[in-house]
Length: 608
Image (cartoon, rainbow, N blue to C red; front, side, top):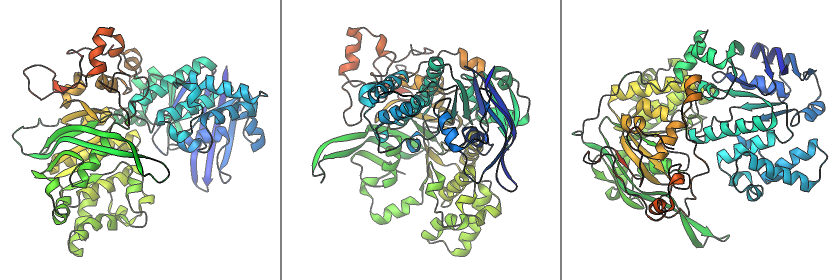
């Protein structure tokens, strides 16, 4: 018997604008329904209509029945008695969904007290028990923390704890893993699974990624342009899709290359050479910040080389030091420690005039195109700005802008628009066009597709792949997404807690990793094939990376390493006392594939 039934639901925001058009779904007790579709397909509008959280100007028709009771047409006061008790929601961005001025324990306790007549002490005890249930270590202590003091994964766990606080009949999870690393995403899905088993709640999981629903959902509904275009059991639908749109979603979520990347040739000259790079951020005490109390070791002695035409991917979780590394390169000045050389020139020796000239050859594409584009400028002016700043005449700049718009696959009409009038994928194409305006020799890409849905992501990756082959640029790609690495990279450097733990050719690192952390990153990537996703052996990383202000002695990964957990006390001493140095994976093969681990994985071995 269904606990939630939605029939012929339509959501209108304005005359002629329909976000949802006649959609319907049913969810039984304890069942997981995955709702899949690209951005703008109506998934979130459907969820907000069920919750009664749409703005006042929205017009909703149809039927939403929870345990047989109609919810549409009820007042906000009536719905408030249902929300949080029988019907709960996990929002996409936990930081904006949580109140910043109250501790997470107080916010969970408030949810309990609103719907149950219990004392403050009992509500606080329930909050701690829920935090423990969703896998937050030191739940008693963490309950006194504020949202900004927790990592993104921890905050999402808090949201899940709050959602299940009153044992709801249905939990709607709206893109709960969209902004998270693959390892944290796997942890959050595991927490949702635990929460479902503990409460027996039905779950409606909204996502743009078919891989997320493949190993978690019982049934799937695919939405496109506000309509439900296909639904059915997860294994049947994802393995034998019945519509071209579902086929497109599945193809877009695949990490396969469109065309093979030619092997790198060692004889090509180096474009970027990084050796022993260090970046520590000072920590100060007191209101006036006069006394240093330590430092955050964001980057702690890393090195790599990129040759002409090569792409090196710098991979790791959030906080591993990837973006800090990129920013240190962009500064084009003397690093805090170590050496950075661009096109054979040491950045420590550059003068101001040299830096401006060198910036023509080093350009960057940022993660969030909306915040990196000037909202007051049209696209044509945004693209012309770097050209005129480096002295190009206006007439030539105008012609160059037209060529750039065509190069990145935009229409001429897009050049006359402002950034807010473009989709996320189109904005990222503008960011790429701006970076290519001066024909750079080195392109730095900071999570270029992290904010995009799978279809826009596939389009932008295909564009980057074609541009790299056509223009012959060298690229440094910063990402946490192994799928992006497999698509674009020649070389891979895996970063953890400010250090490089593995580096080598992409085929070797992704196909036969030697470090347990690399293996865990690969295991965390969901597959869109439900049979493979549910049956493959996987190792989930537990806990969070170490505090960069006080990293542990020895191997920094050992607190989360599944291999270390299985060592004897005598075997573990090396990991506890000695920081592992990088060495070739196979003796005699040189530094082509190196790993920094005392107990690396053997060839073809999976981490325990």
